[in-house]
Image (cartoon, rainbow, N blue to C red; front, side):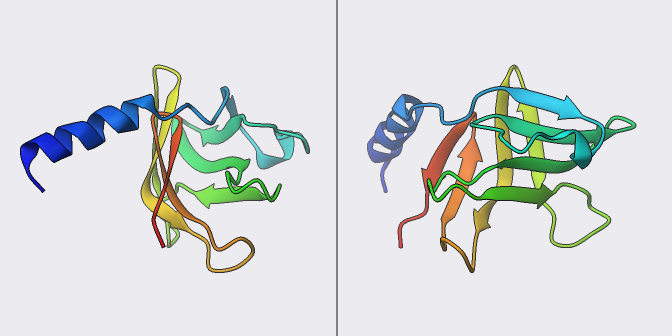
Length: 113
């Protein structure tokens, strides 16, 4: 891939619509309501993010609870700055909807099959 192709891809990524709504910080998973819509809930204790909870972008209406604590494996790293949420590495579901995607700046990017 040359530089021009890379710049075109980068520009196209910025045009991808934002999928998620608000980022809501809570102290316990029990504080998260049953209906969360497109919001992202971060469970944060003592300044450390422990869980990210959001609806899977596949539209099959199932909730994902992602571990952000490095004390348990596997774990992901979340970045929630300026109202935008990013998550690395990608989420690859090996059951339910079999989705594979990553989240960058509130946008969902699907991995081609």
